[in-house]
Length: 97
Image: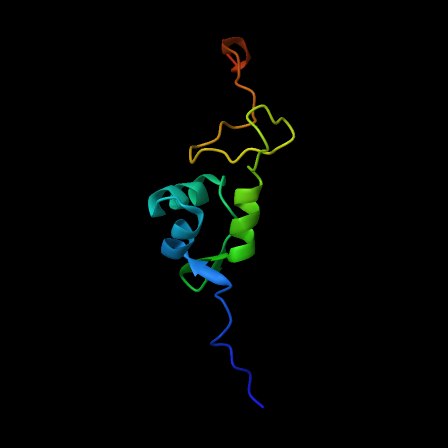
């Protein structure tokens, strides 16, 4: 008996379908991937795919009950995140004579 997978919903979405699924543009989803602020993804050969449950979890991580809800997480903007390395002061750059 062979398995019939045609009636199963897609478990992996490529970027265009994933962007429609979460309601973001393709470019915004790509930026999230580059900056590390987006949902987890996999690479299959040269293709980027997203698991449907990972997309749902990422969206749900920003779910809030009301505007002052402090228990909810935050879905970051698709922007480069500042590094966690403290800036060096001008006197600590190793000025040698």
